[in-house]
Length: 271
View 1: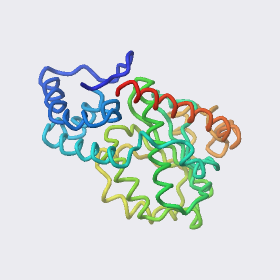
View 2: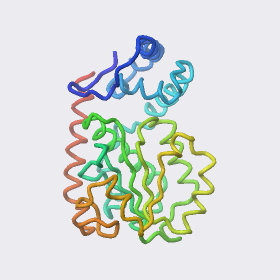
View 3: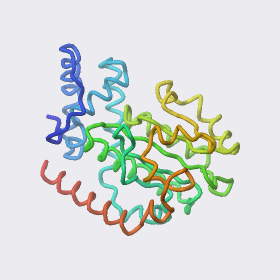
View 4: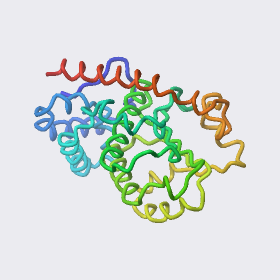
């Protein structure tokens, strides 16, 4: 059986036909779920609905994508990544889950490329996955199930711009293994330099995902307040906080390590 945290209402009312498709998809992947407590915890009713919705409720296509993700999660083990493994990537606050949700109740994942501090591609990718998992947990706890990406391009340069290969890996992970998780992606003040990455990745972006990406320039004074609580954002984006107030390494470390421990306990209970 799938597991669903009590109290969450992130699965919308389904038709009788849709309920049957959810049951069919669960039956199809149940043998795989039995091989791993972590997969049992992850593959909730909401998960099944997301994969079906992403494939327009085509059970065969949803099963194919879901099986791909189950294989990926079984080998990559995103649920088992700990703070200790990725802390070297996190120390500058280049990427973190904001402590306040956006105005739609979605968890906010902030990215600040100017604070890039590493050239270790594998660990960079692992930190991205760790951050996605953290954002998904917060999204589920909020009962929304979706996240917002807020990419602050202040200080973006050739020195800190990720290679296009990393951008493509990020896109692949997001689209293939986190379907229906992205509610909005805000690119704040992207410079011309970013156009190189955008032109390279745009053809591979799913049309549904593409519609969720918005570009906001500094002169736009209405877009950010429409989506975010400005008192929780950094001053360079029109907010009220300094960089140190937005991100405290000590505070974030404690929060993430606490969540790591909770995840370990949850998986132990399922064994």
